[in-house]
Image (tube, helix red, strand yellow):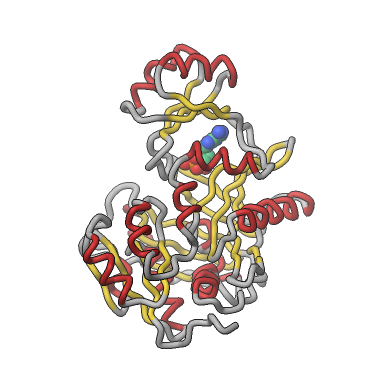
Length: 354
Ligand code: AMP
């Protein structure tokens, strides 16, 4: 492993949110320094990182300086303009690479890619205007969900179409953005696989977690997921197939719908993932260390699960529960250092060992 980064090396992270914060903590435990690049002021990752650059993703000078100051670059959120990566890539390795970022930024690219490698998604069709929406409804039927192709997260940019009459309002909700119509999946569960691939091509997947959403935002992830052994194996094989097809390096979150006809890929996230936070209390090497190991060219660590865990997100005013949670046994609290608890804002999470 001649490409192993040595302790003391610096890992550049694009994005300074809670994922960057937890990546920085994991990196520092392995002796690395982190340099955060983030447009917003006071990023949560800044409290625990070695260095922070506050600049826009279109600031070529700042990006060049950032690249020159680090040994490798990774990212903690997928909506980074690919032009920023082009500038960095000229001088520094970016792991995971630019291609997966471009794929995951656009639901149509993402679904096309997933289908091209032989994996199933909900039926879908591209929608740009009323005529294409009507054609899509004729093909897919109702109920269905209309989603903007770009910049949607936590259920934002989505509209349900229960019957064809709902079409005009759903289209208006897209505010002119290109959209994709997805058939409504009658799933028995939502699960995700947090999967890792090393620089040497080795793949290791964490045990699938079962996810429950509230108002479109992840509420809890529980392991073990209530799925059969065959479904567990399928989930892991699907994730591994995606990573190999992309020659991926790092951790990825693969969200799946469990249906009687098999598993459908909902979304891929080329980064550590909220539904993988349980690994902090359930595995020797959690998703954050696993990602740092991969991007640093280290061997992947042992992510086998040794406990049953429930991860609960603390959203907005949920942080008021912290004094009580602090008294609870077998409970690990993670707070992100965000000053203001706005509705829908992820303030922290707790991992309860069951
Ligand atoms: P997304 O932003 O695409 O991950 O969607 C957020 C959540 O909406 C998912 O986790 C599901 O709970 C629900 N959802 C999204 N797409 C579908 C679908 N095609 N059928 C049923 N539920 C969906």
